[in-house]
Image (cartoon, rainbow, N blue to C red; front, side, top):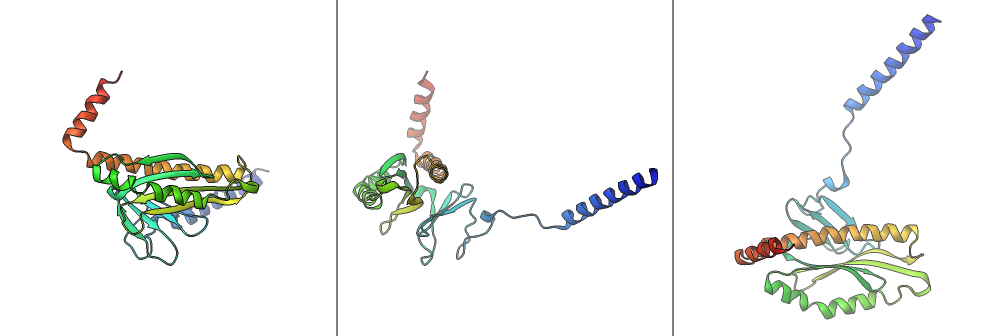
Length: 209
């Protein structure tokens, strides 16, 4: 019995030792976002491609850059976060989240000039949403680009139940990306504030109860 016990213990030790040896020589798994986007030197920290394949988004918070992937046939476009002017989360034609620049003045004016285009785009995209159970969730990303300032990133466009698993998963992912962009928008605002604006904002914050 003792010999059998010793044999089994030795066998277990050899097996564990072999596993450690294999694992120690195995390459560490790489996150998908650790790869540069084709055709650029951009290394994203987060990346998402829309379900329709027509719009995608990548960000690098450390370098303060965003990359817009408009389609599989067009080259990716890189922008500093200072060129990011707005983010609108849209569910079945209703804006349920928005982030927009407040500084500087010319950026605010540029964003205001996109209002009609934004509203028309939402109407056209979500015209059939909620009819016969069809659900659609989009994120509208706005940048300072005179030719093509609005990118639509789609997270859901199908017949499904609102509140169901697929719907909630898509909404959660879209909300995450809206928060990411909103954070970058706030950072860009902070970076473009004049010293007097920054001082005034600090004084107002300190004066609040």
